[in-house]
Amino acid sequence: MNLPIRNYRTTDLPKLYEICLRTGDSGKDATHIYKDPMLLGSFYAAPYAVLHPELTFILAENDVPIGYIIGTDNSEKFFTRSEEIWFPELRKKYPMPDVNDTSADARIIRLIHKGHVPKPELLSYPAHLHIDILPEGQGKGMGKKLIETFSNKLREMNVPALHLEVGKRNVNAIMFYEKTGFHKIIEYEYSIAYGIILLN
Ligand SMILES: CC(C)(COP(=O)(O)OP(=O)(O)OC[C@H]1O[C@@H](n2cnc3c(N)ncnc32)[C@H](O)[C@@H]1OP(=O)(O)O)[C@@H](O)C(=O)NCCC(=O)NCCS
Image (tube, rainbow, N blue to C red; front, side, top):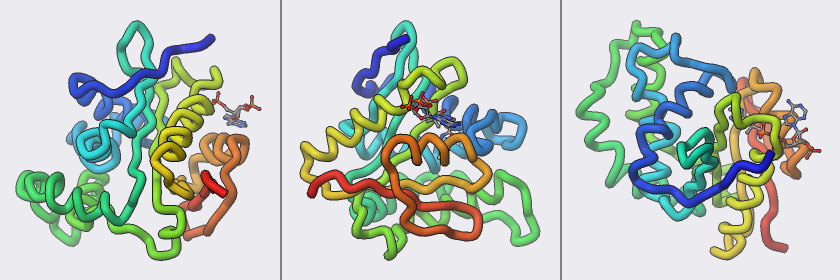
């Protein structure tokens, strides 16, 4: 079954936070893991929709978002812009946790204080993405279509290459990326960076 992919509207933002949380435990529902349901999306979803609405594509069912692909064409510029526009307010809202706080919330708050720091070894793949689809939209070929939509938009913008990072526990997503043309760039302790060349 083909579900529609459409452009992002600002009224979609609450759903993006929800989808991020409901797929945030290595692809599974993370609702039970976080006390604050907004935290995960504050780092992994919302800043992309706010800073890059043109690169935010929505998978919809009855016009309601059930999935998204989000990202940036330039990870270095995204870092700078998110430091200026996105993180200052959030850092006031979520002060740095105590060093002994090992909760999942504290881990994300520490990321909020660190920001979206680009990794030097991935800079030759300047764009990056995140993709999340709720279970009802999975396994229908729509993830592949979202990747194609996002990649085509980047090609129009003359972006040479794209990367993403996936946790090693998320075996389904790893299989999906390997099936959709991504190659392994580098393996870290807990994650793998995959890439794709967009322009030759
Ligand atoms: C991972 C995800 C984006 C994949 O999207 P999807 O719509 O389910 O995948 P598709 O149906 O488009 O699959 C595309 C191809 O990948 C293959 N594939 C997908 N998942 C697979 C799996 N677990 N094992 C083997 N192949 C798989 C499909 O068979 C299909 O192959 P084909 O083109 O030869 O038919 C989606 O399942 C998802 O959002 N999961 C939860 C959130 C998540 O893990 N996000 C990634 C975080 S890094």
